[in-house]
Image (cartoon, rainbow, N blue to C red; front, side, top):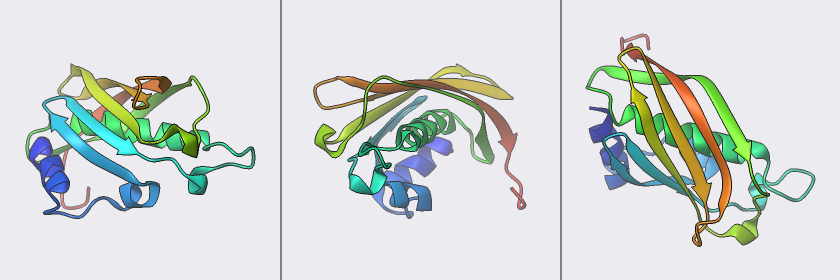
Length: 143
């Protein structure tokens, strides 16, 4: 199942995705329709203004909300992003420390699912939040 696959990644029995490795994302918890992914922002994420590029928050939310949906998938099914909405609340910098992204399924449909996500620091301060709509499809050898 999707949840078992994510749990295997947490346990280290399968490799982390290339995107997770590139961006520094670490999945630390998964449940049915719920996931927590952490990221420590650094200068490698910075734009020319000296703050993390908005793409860091957008990618973290997309990864996390997608993981929440994937955790509800039976074996042989996957989900892909149809729509992504991100609200940036405050700048992300290396001074933020570890950021926690929590994703939760809102609607676990059979063809389309939705989820919400929030990025917070250790004190619970909100940095960004978002929502997604995902298309669910059966995996094939060509998927």
